[in-house]
Length: 182
Image (tube, rainbow, N blue to C red; front, side, top):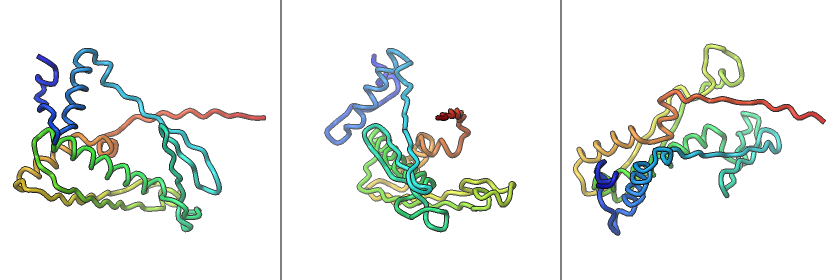
């Protein structure tokens, strides 16, 4: 019996190709648990003003701030990219788990917004955190399933979405400062 059979991943079909990825991953991890760890990396370079160029794998994105936060408003800012990351991770997680649970989803549309009190960033009040104080996500899902099935899917997505997990659970972060002087 394969690991994917033990953890009940349905067989892949033409309509459920993501199940093949989940099954292959389960089998690889079953053979060697170190296969479960993936390392993701990104690099950043400060450019003009508060803007930066960030690269991950073969992709590059520009990050900036609106003028009210010292930027030239040439690109989304870091907290907007967080919302982008959250929504895109939710889409991936909805797609994977819908296939795994056999739930038909015809369309998914998401919206997120977060409240940020700039007093924390600008150091105007040490009692105010510099990040979001609240994030709200609205998911509009369309398909032929019952409301209960979509609620089940939402519960599973919220339990398994990696970017959501970064927000709701503490993640240790270490940083190293390297000073390069001429």
